[in-house]
Amino acid sequence: MADEEDETGFEEELDEGCSGVDVCHGRRKRLFSKELRCMMYGFGDDQNPYTESVDILEDLVIEFITEMTHKAMSIGRQGRVQVEDIVFLIRKDPRKFARVKDLLTMNEELKRARKAFDEANYGS
Amino acid sequence: MADPARIKTEVTLESPVAGQDEKPKAKATNDTSSPAPEKPADELKESSSQDQRKQDDASEPAAAEDEEEGTSGQPASKRLKVEPEKKKEKRQKVDEDEIQKMQVLVSSFSEDQLNRYEMYRRSAFPKAAIKRLIQSITGSSVSQNVVIAMSGISKVFAGEIVEEALDVCEKWGDTPPLQPKHMREAVRRLKSRHQIPNTKYKNILFH
Image 1 (spheres, one colour):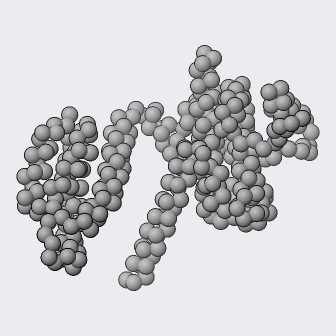
Image 2: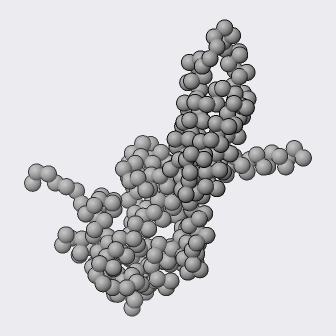
Image 3: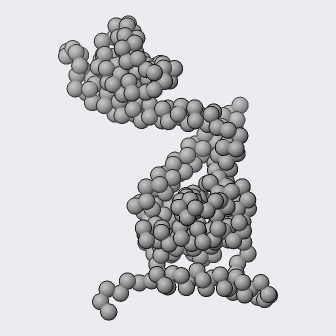
C-alpha cells in the first residue's frame, strides 16, 4: 500500500516540478481534457470539474488503455491487438463485456444498413 | 395497472379466428406479459406479438404440409420450431419493455437532468486519438473495431471511477466537484477489488 501512495505522489511531484522547466519526461500533452470534462459531468460530477481531477482521470484512462493493449498483445496473435483478445480480457467484468458486445453488434447493424442504403441508391 | 383477466379474454377471442395452433402460443405469451405495469404498453406488446404470430402462422401451415401429410394435430417438428421463436419473442419483448421504460423515464426528466443525460450519452473519446495511442504502443496498425471496443471500455472505466469517487465524496461529507483525494481513494478501493488492471508488481510466491 505504501508503494501505491508513493506512485501517485511521485506523479504529483513531477507535475509540480515541471511547471518551471521546459522539457519534462512523462508529461504528455493533455489528450482528452475536453471530452473528459463532459464525461465527468455526465457521470455525476459538477458541471465544471476541477482540472486536477480531470488530469488524474486522464492519466488513469491512458494507463488503462496501455495495460489492456499490452495484455492483448501478449495473448492470441502475438504482437497484434485484435477484438477477440479485448473481449477475452474483459470477460470477467460484466459491464464492460456487455458494452463491448452492444457496440460491436450496433456497428455491424449500422454497416449493413449503410450498405443496403448505398445499394438502393446505386440501383435507382 | 394491468388487468390480467381483461387481457386474457382479448387473446382468446381472437384465437379461433386465426386457427387452433395459436392457442398454446397465446397462453405462453400471456404468462410473460401479465407482470407489465402499463395498459397501453401491454396492448402495444400484444398487438406486435400477435402480428408476429400471424406472420409465423402464415408460413407454418405451408411448411407443415410439405413435411407431414398423414398426421394431424401438433407434429414434433412444429413444436421444435415454436421454442426458438418463443425465446426470440421473449427477448424482443424484454427489449421493448426496456425501451418503453426508458422513454417514460426520460420524458419525466427536469432540464438539469436532461442536460446531464445528454452529456452522458454523447460524450466519447476521440477515435483518432485512441487509435494513435494504441498504434504508438503496438507499433503496428489496428482495425477499426479495436478502436471502437477500446474507446467504449475506456468510457465505462472512467464511469466506474467517477461513480466510486462520488461514493467516497458523499461518505466523507464533501460536495462535488470531485477533488483529487476522492479520485485517489476511489482508485485505491477499485484496486483492492481488482477492477483496475495492474501488471507492474509481480507476486513473488516463495521468497
